[in-house]
Amino acid sequence: MQAFEWYVPADQRHWQRLRDALAGLKATGVDNIWIPPGCKASSQQGNGYDIYDLYDLGEFDQKGGVSTKWGSKADLLQLVEKAEEVGIGLIWDAVLNQKAGADRTEACQVVEVDPNDRTRSITDPYSIDGWLGFDFLGRGDHYSSQKYHWYHFTGTDYNNANGKSAVYRILGDGKYWSTSVSREKGNYDYLMFADLDYAHPEVESDVKNWGEWIYSQAKISGIRFDAIKHYSETFLNDLVDHLDAVVGPGWFLVGEFWEDSLGDMTDYIQRMRHKFSLFDAPLVYNFSQISRTENGDLRTIFNDTLVKYEPVNAVTLVMNHDTQPYQALEAPIEPFFKPLAYALILLRYDGYPCLFYGDVYGIKGDHPFPPSCGGKVPDLCLARKLYAYGEQRDYFDYAQCIGWTRLGTWDRPFGLACIMSNAGPNEKWMYIGEQHKGEIWTDVLGWEQGEVVINQDGWGLFTCPGVSMAVWVNKEADGRGKFGKL
Image 1 (cartoon, helix red, strand yellow):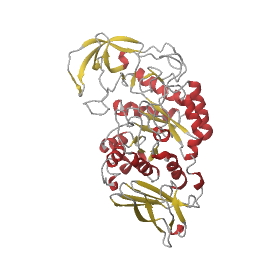
Image 2 (cartoon, one colour; image 1 turned 120 degrees about the horizontal axis):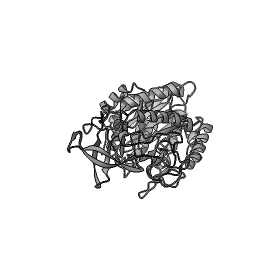
Image 3 (cartoon, one colour; image 1 turned 30 degrees about the vertical axis):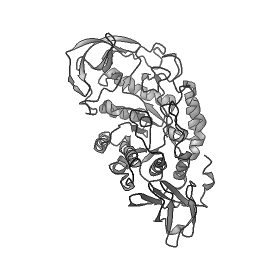
Image 4 (cartoon, helix red, strand yellow; image 1 turned 90 degrees about the horizontal axis):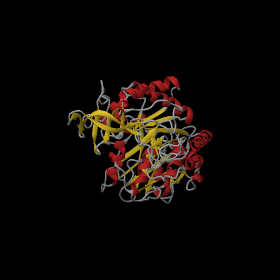
């Protein structure tokens, strides 16, 4: 589960909230949580993508206080301890592309580049006064003695001398944008703030050391790498190899490579030697489009998605902090469709599903939203934990009504049948296996009434309400009494 949304209150209590929620999340079937960027941001209100100091987890008095938006380091370590106790892994959100909130300006030579083609200079070289000096005065040399200066960066976006905002490429001997980045905008090395230069050996060394250090501090089981199409693939491959060699293999690694181009995503996975997973952005856009299309064709829901073509390396999701309402990459999904989308990522065989904090607990801020799916996301997650096992049989045979069954296994015998409609009430004959003959099945969500009796050949006539869905399971199955109580 992504364990935050963009508008979580800046009350320095989020690590405590998560600590208190861990036992309940584990009971629903959540085995790992992706926690927010825990390094010191440029202010106590910053979500951490405006990262100031990698080595300050809410321990030093910098940028307005000791704690981060999420809490103090002591709070974080209590979360780490509780996660270890209940058996939930922590996935760290690593922001390694940029730094923000510099302590002072430094003079450097630059050229301005075309914002839409960063390979094209639009000025002659000249000097600017950039916010590029990072001294970390509150931390000093604790954990790392590395300070950052203009020559540790490839670009910036503000000239303090005249107040002009632009995309400035910093000049120096052999200095240029990284060439192993997205070719969008000609070269998409520069994203925001002060852009780190991974061709500089001091930057490379400091961040590799940080990788070892964060593991020792937070006992993380994986890393979510932010903005990976904006910094060196060569360095990232080296970092992964370094962590495997020094800390040990077995990390779960996922990158934010937000693209609607399936080909670009699969090519990236191959270049990263299939050690990386990516978030399935095309699937999110399919959810958004079909949910807002009258009589949308549900049979096409997995067309051109990562989970269809690289299922082992696809992290499937419905929403995240960038696509939630009022964010830059907002991908609206109609409320009726959210349960369908969650069923499609949770109850099927392929992909590694990721819940969204805002859908489970609601969204705060100026435009609040209640928990989605009528509060049923935990029930859908529990259905995955208890029943989504065994052979999968698909019934994607009608545009407005699709379904599938999971037949169960010898040690997880109960199975399930899921049916959904984006039009009127519907029904579908589906096979669940002769081993289930004579069983009486009901909807664990309680949205569809009645019972289904599995016939002698292992088939049942399963139904669902209009613009809704149902998850049918043997009414005597283990765990049925847990639904609706999470």
